[in-house]
Image (cartoon, rainbow, N blue to C red):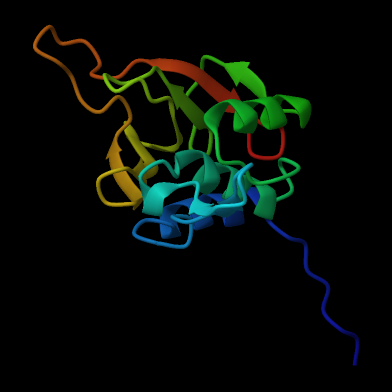
Length: 155
């Protein structure tokens, strides 16, 4: 009997993994050794784990070369691997938000219906939230999106 042949559905699998990631703690730690030989958790138990979360999923689907601990290195790797900026919002696209009041950059996935999934620094794991974190008193986005990124394999 012939073995059945399957075609992998990258986009569908990628989108489902993003949605299934909510609440996972698998991206909250990345241990490194500093220049003085001290071992430390570069992600501070999920406090600064957005880039590792995003890049980890992108790496699983071979959409970048390596998981990263910073937003800038993640975006650089994305651009080197065929990701491009767009103005459209579609599920699976990567969002890059402006710095918050603490000076932190942030990455997440757009999932549709004005929702995004990104790592919560308070909880230390991915959560669903409004894609601009809601509106302020002036009816402006609480957090402006500086970049939206797409890739041909998920467009």
